[in-house]
Image 1: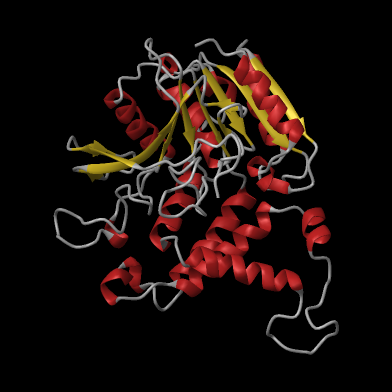
Image 2: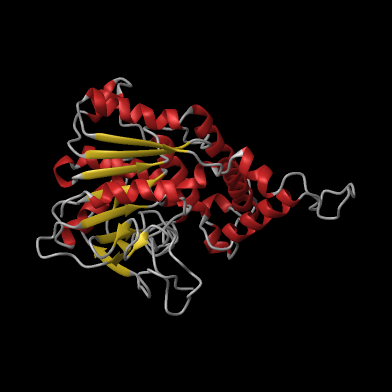
Length: 375
């Protein structure tokens, strides 16, 4: 349902690119489509564009809703709109579905022109840097030479950071929310367990399940359940569910007894019903590979020396997957390079998912930073 101050009814757009894109993995996409949405108006100087980069399960649908599906509200609708922190009366906002996605952009479900069949497992590995390159081509298509800001949460924040390194002259401000300069070993481990849940599903068929008319729903459901636990804090799970029993007592069954079990199964089933398993695999690997310090011997300050943007870095107190200390690593590296950087650590009980929620303090930080950007 359309909310007050919403951008209202929106419609996705598609940009086709016939120029091949060479990927960091060595693979090549001979041609590809990018699905995107825009909100607000590009000013005459083309200086008010803001790119919003999505996280693992996000998409181009950042704000508003669709005429034929009013319940499908954008994933960051509480942030983007007229009078909202990212004010579409000032900014021209763009959301793009990343390469390898499953929301219209070229990905594993798309047709491989070489074979005439779905790419499936043959879709090449993509990285954060590849996504930024594709986004830059879209910006060229739209006539945008420089973004007033690039922002994102989680994996989206990694893309925003990478923008400042790949195209330092094209980004004035970076807003990295609940993000990190690279994944910890623990994070990579969680991603690997989730991937193994998918890869071991009998319906996966080596990634070519489309040809068999099936979906590896069991594996994808388990992957989402694993991931969802890490997106929430122990406090938030305890407050929402505690040890509540559905039947009021133990019935000694492997069926749902605890309310938290019901919640996780619901989230898993819901996710498996609309997300693509190959996209999940590709995206988690892109998360794992991201490490701008790698080519600098692990020195993040040296890696970020190339950036010339001003930064806002935001973390959340109970986010244990992208913990505040990871955000502070970014801040310290920027300070080392004498860059302008603001940092806010928000008290929140909601864990990693805090970046998606309508928290007054968090939104005030974003609003105040964005309001001072000159366009």
